[in-house]
Structure formats: structure tokens, C-alpha cells
Length: 487
Image (cartoon, rainbow, N blue to C red):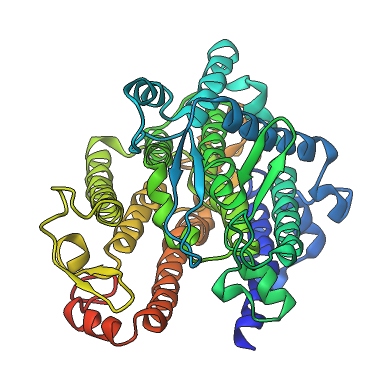
């Protein structure tokens, strides 16, 4: 019952939270809106004006134009997936003993193919993402910050959010209904996820009934929905939206700060690295264990591109300069975290795909009764989820550049002390909002901590069921869950 209530709350609560963030921290009155700082005298009509609530009411949250362009973006990603050079890679072994094949065109090939094909794949590394970013760079070169893609995203942020929320709901519903056509022993290698067969409609819709749902589109071919959504529209959208906010900062202020550039570049590197290492995603719990339902659909398509860009969205209005020391500090923290993340995941992927590889052959492990091997040395001997620690540490350099976030927007000619004057004459000052903005710009850090702890507990339950006594033995050797000597 608790899981069902949680699934319902998340399915409808998280979209609401993103709307609250979008309106409460805005470019009309401030971050947060002034009335929210004085709840005792809160007036609904005044608040609506401060947050830019659409005149059409709830219907103004969406638009056919924004929805159409959002769908065109998804189609564009699918077309690139189909036409760009690619190779096939095998996923991990399914419960049936067979393996699914995946078409990968964003990675450095590591499968056994001929030399000519290897050169082709290396030339096509980052294919989907770099093709898109190259087109956007060309448009920006010709039209600058006024490039229509950037202005459209900034001007239709709420409507684009709505379009992606609706797509996530529709996609989750489609795969849920489709999952009932899965038959045992089918030639398509379709399987149901172990955790998605509770019999409760809402929970199974949320968690995902089918493990790896696929769809065949005219002229495009077969697409693995989960793997496609995991790496393409949402992650690439994260970069695109950051760039849109960089352009917005330039339109509003006439300059671009080191803080927003830093966040945009390092987050782009994070995304592009995941595309380079595309085969590694095939061994993650999202692909191997979790079904594809609303949880992953919303996370991939809405949560990532809209929550993870809160910092650049904030800095577009209230620019901050880090300076040399600030850049060195956040850069060093990020480099340390990224190194742990990359090295640990690469070590796990190498061990799972080729345990005789010289880079991992020396590692110690426990062989379970199921035949699986659990690493107890190297990165994975430090903590059971050392990659989670790296992920959380990477969250801090994204938020720290916003400082003691919070600002108010005053009318032109106010001449407040310490104000930043926008090109349209309005003034931006911290004022009484100073510090309250961290609710928005540091939420990512808090959320990620909660997410990783919850994911660790889920992993522990699943592994305990799968490995039994071997898992208890493993936990006595690798004591720490995420943070060594702490948790």
C-alpha cells in the first residue's frame, strides 16, 4: 500500500513541483516571488501577476506550437538514430538466457567488428549529440543570442515543460498497455520486469511492467524505447536548455558570466561522456532490472532537462562572477568527482563484459551460487556504490556558482544599492530574497542525496533476494554503502 501511495504521489506531485519552481522563481518579479516571502499577507491575484500566470488560466500552460516543436525534436532525434553510422552491441543476459541487441551510434565501439567499421564508428562518435549541437552552433554563429531556437525556449519554457510532461504520461501509458501482449518464449525476446507485476494499475504503470519495450517506426526501424529515452532527448535537451539560458543572459545583460559558462560546459561534458560510453549504460540497473514506466519516462524526459537546468535558468537573470579562485575550487571538486565516477563505472563495465581484461583481471571477487561475481576490491571494494558518491559530489559544483541565491526585480529607475541593471532598464537586487533562492538552485543536491539513498536501499533488497547468503557475506566485506566510513 505504501509503495502504491508513493507511486501516485510522485506521478502527480513531481510535475506539480516543477511548475511551482518555474513560477515561484521567475524573470518577472524575482526568485522567489515577493509575495511568497510574506505569506501572511499573500494575495492570490497579486501572486498571479508576480509569477506570470497565463491569462488563459490552466489552458495557457500549454500550446499547440510548443507541443508541435517538441514532438519535432523527438522525431529529429529518432531520424538521427536511424541514419547515422552505428554498430550493434549485446546487452546483458536476460532471465531467458538470451541477449538483446542494441543499435549504438553515440559511442566509441568496443565490439568485435572489422577495422573499417571501427574507423567508421570512431568518426561517428557523439554522432547524435554533435550533429544537433553543430546545427545549433551554426545558427548561433549567424544570429547570435537572438537565434530563434534560444528565444523560443526562453519565451515558451512553461509550454515546453507541459509538452514533455504530456509525452511522459502518454509514453508510460503506451508501454503499460503494450506490456499485456508479452507472451512467454516470444521470438522478440520481450520480458516483463520482476518489480512491475504487482497487479496494481497505478504502481505497475509507474514502475513499468515490461523490461525493455521496443517499437518499430516507419522508415526509422526498431527503437529500444528505454535505451533511446535514457540517452537522447532528455540528456541532449539538458545541454540545449542550458545554452538557451546562456543566450538569455546575454540578451538581458549584454554579457555572459564565468559561472553560467562553467556550469554549461561541465554539464555538457557529463552528457557527452555518457554518449561516448553508451555501451556502459547497458549494464546499469535502469536497463537490466527496472521496467520502463512513468518513473523512467518522466525522469528521462522531464526531470533531467528541467530540474537540472535550474542553476543556469537562475543565473540568466541574476549573473554571478566566480573569478579565478572560485573557478579553480569548483573545478577541482568536479574533476575529483568525475574521475571517481568515470573510473569506477569503467572498471565495473570492463569486469562484467571481459573479466580477463588486464585492467581488471587482478581484482578480487566473490562468486555467488547464481554464478555472478561481486567485486570486493578496486573501486567497488571501497563502497558498494562508490559511483553514487561521485554522482552526488558532482551535484555541488552545479549549485555552488549560484552563491547565496535569491533576487528581486525592481522597476527601471529605482537605483537600489548593488543593483544589476538589465538592458531593458529593470534592476535586479538580492534584497530580502537573498538566501531564499537556494530552495531552487540547491534543490538538486538535496534531491540527489535522497534519490541515491533510496536507490541504494532498492538495490540492497533486490540483491538480497537474488544472492541470499552470498549477499550478506559480501556486505560484511564491503561495509560502506555510499560514503566510506560514514554511510
